[in-house]
Length: 68
Image (cartoon, rainbow, N blue to C red):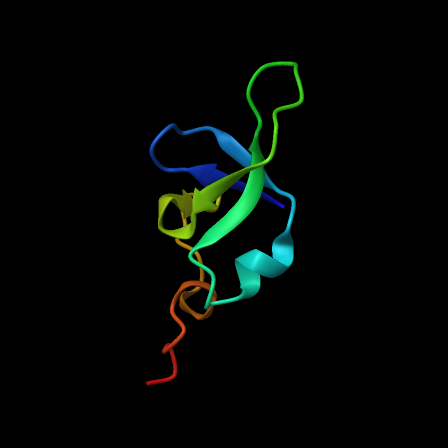
């Protein structure tokens, strides 16, 4: 899955999608898609990620208390 980093405007390939779907996790592991070289995995803050279309992540992915 590809998301966009709001700060750098780079695409980020999510390598551990289960972290993304868990509202208890504040970070997700991914790789920046910049240049021709494969980038190393690193942690990204979920609050800084959006879909490439500009939409925010679903609340159930980022807020552990979304049902309240």
